Image 1 (cartoon, protein in one colour):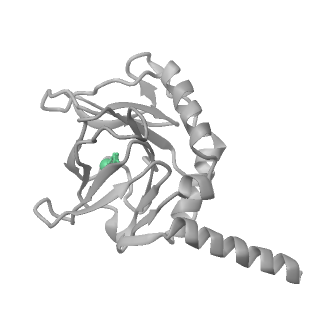
Image 2 (cartoon, rainbow, N blue to C red):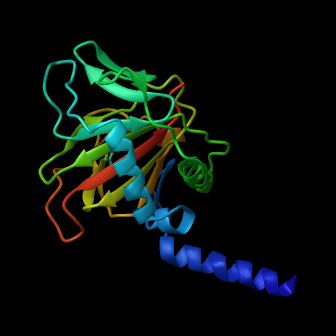
Length: 222
Ligand code: SIN
Ligand code: FE2
């Protein structure tokens, strides 16, 4: 018993040291290295992204205004986020193949719910995983995630590969924006008061961590 408690404490301390989780704002928790400490690790995730994209390839969606996005996207899970001339929405089928998106594995559901729990959001069960692929120069302009049926659920983001400057604004577009570097293996939870904050990604720069950046966002769409 005593030995187990000591071990638990030691693990807890290790987790604290490794992750140094930090609130960027109420409801916005950054968990550096959380992919390895809470989840299946980056090698597993990269292999999974490869398998998903062989079934549902990365594509550059068009905004409703007709512009091609610099970030390439695909999805996994019961719902996938899509954009075209008709607008932004979640769809159960990949419009390229008319087939369901590849399934969301248990490992990712657990990672998302554990990260959400660490930020104080219990019982998070995502039904959508948007996978973004950034080559150097790709960026994501400031936006709110508001195509989901309820904003009561958080969004959990997982970053892999090249580091990026994440931009976290306020609840209105003109609010001051803070920058947070997201490195490979970092998690970020946006929920509660932060759920509708504007956010985006500054143009990704080439670097030593790889050729590109992936970001997964686990969401509850329905
Ligand atoms: C997003 O807002 O969907 C992506 C955020 C990121 O790439 O870090
Ligand atoms: Fe977003």
